[in-house]
Image 1 (cartoon, helix red, strand yellow):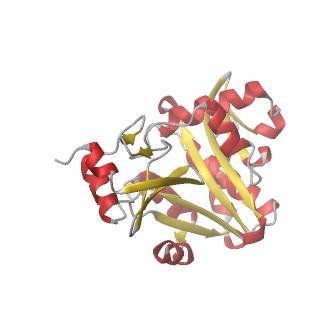
Image 2 (cartoon, one colour):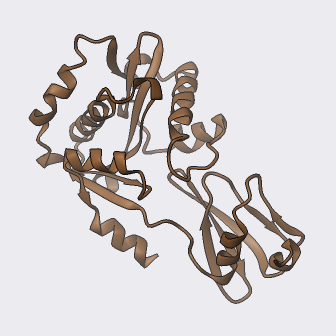
Length: 250
């Protein structure tokens, strides 16, 4: 196995850009360029070695330096919001009218520092179950990249509250120039799963996209996140061929 310094000798400098919740680190080499997604860790390179808080595997590092792209092929989906048949899912929402759980939004609760901290903790806990998610944002990174970003709208953060417990959330951002909303995250605490909460929250996310005037609601998932993919297809999401084609071009 080559040493870190031997591998780093092929690296001249680095550049970091952010795409949704993934950090893409571009390794600029003397004669070629390759890229690696390490979410959300920033991998730094220097002449003395590859410096990072959570090292990728040796095989991944070698693939990157050879110019290969180790990223998974995401399952990209979209929903025609105008064609969504909401009446089919009314029973899902009515089921909770007599339960302890109530639905609200971050906008209604108040988009306060304390509420943002609660949202962060819930998102962090739920994201731990996403395949190959890696380490989560720090709170400051989360606020900067998610909540202070232009597409963010607190009305698009639907919450399921069980008394004082934040049991579930979905976050939908608005991208008006592209005429679509994006489903950033839907997550439920393990203690509250298998009750239909994620499906109910996703219906509320679709409602938000529709009332905001968006034609499409887009999302993507790790290909092994079978439950999330199946839920979205049940709602009417189909393969997003436009986004898939764009991904392959890049």
